[in-house]
Length: 433
Image (cartoon, rainbow, N blue to C red; front, side, top):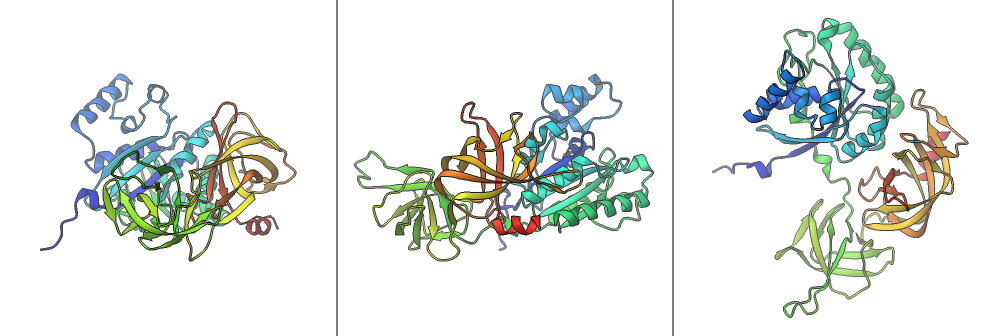
């Protein structure tokens, strides 16, 4: 008898929506939920009631994701709203992110774990600054697939010429950003054209609906690195007669497949040992996969603590350095200044670092690099070099999202003020030339 695939076994796709204000991101997600029958009756009734109170003649599907009172009053998205739904083919986690420029940091947060990004473009306005900004962030975050949904086609008489012109304009932007996996879909989120079902108003479009793309796009890239990586989060020493000598190292696999008997090296110390046991709670395992949580027991009693990284002794090794080059998105109203000190957190390791050099800042409108910059303001995107108090073990972001990214934390307020994606210094020099 064939094995039946249950809900827990279904493949998961994480995707984010982005675009300028009022491009229809929340309405699109509401339409996906509504047309895929992923809304409970009481939810629909609440949205219908809220729509009437707001004076809308029709059901405002955007209210399904705009959860904050301020969002509903203004008709905008402020916070990142996460929604979960499933079809018979796949499970989905959606991050609905804000369009206002002051909430760009929320877009970075929502997109940081995405497998796919939906960029909304208003057919009446075409490519605008926020389209380029969000595309640049998507390229920095190495999101594998970009779907450009040209929305509100009903307001331009479903014009094929307008759709094609916007496609051509965005293709030029994608070429500058080296974004290769781009699909274009003409839609009307309000009326459901080409969202879940094909439109009878745009018979000239022969491609897939948005739902077809979401259900069929490959997500086999999810293990971003074949190399074994396990940042140590916690050292387990039970106070128990049953486990008098147990010393386990707990954390989440950030790359590769780990097996009992594998040889590991501890970074940054360079000490080596062999995997004795692998366990999840009371369950012993012979192998674990990324991104499983795991407790590792080694054959040798060596010095390991939170912030160390367990790495396969074979294969590509992480870099270990105090000088790190990265692309940065700055989140905070207080600027990033040269020689300023911040707490730097990479995976489970934490140290203090200074901004050694701002290599260049990106002009979002022209995509040119501005040199001789001494500070970064909120929402600026730039290349910087930092120097840390202690050496950090890291990969390049293009090889591993977890061990190739870090955050900056203000030492006084403990706010997260920026995020960095680590790059090969050579690629920065080449990019500048």
